[in-house]
Image 1 (spheres, rainbow, N blue to C red):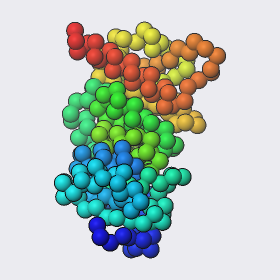
Image 2 (cartoon, rainbow, N blue to C red):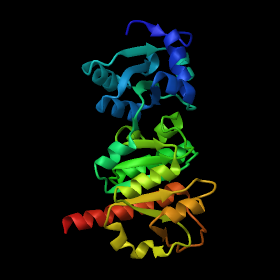
Image 3 (spheres, one colour):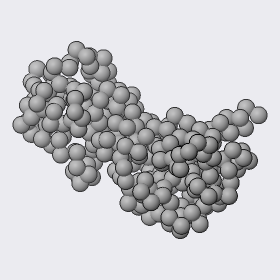
Length: 269
């Protein structure tokens, strides 16, 4: 790490291009920013290269040691290079170049998952990252992003996931109808969140005891009527205050928690 790479370095310029989805697809890599993401990337052996800002070297010494112990190259970069790579107001000074994480829907279904979080055409990277984080926290087996969805390797999505994008399988399937059909055919009960659902979440224990795939809609438009018709049940979350609705991240947290609670209770029984 004797050489300090500047913002003009060809490697830094190449890594900065990973902010664009087209470059990520072309290179088969993405950029993870911040200690949580980098530590997790190293732990699951997805990091190809670690970059540390010279001024933050002491703060991230443990990450450097972990990377070197695992044979992962560590590059020292200047403060301006860190600013070029960062998408945050205050760059954390540590990054990892990682291999893309896309999981196969066929492989996920072959493992007979008990709990899936399925987002239909999510567009907001912060919400998608939060959904991935909730799914991981609640023990979901995978997250499935259907249709024209945000790239889970987007920097904001990776940061919002707090590193969990590395620890829970994330599937991208552009064909909504085919994806839902494959999931249902594998024996998973599809549950659509709906304000006027015929099943109240407070009384859904019997439904939740089985293998479940929760469907969460687009932030702006929710679930389309076509997707709702595919669902085996439409489930409403009781709202006891004056709020008219919940955003997708909040709804997902509640629904996934309830499923995890029931599965845990069934497992103990």
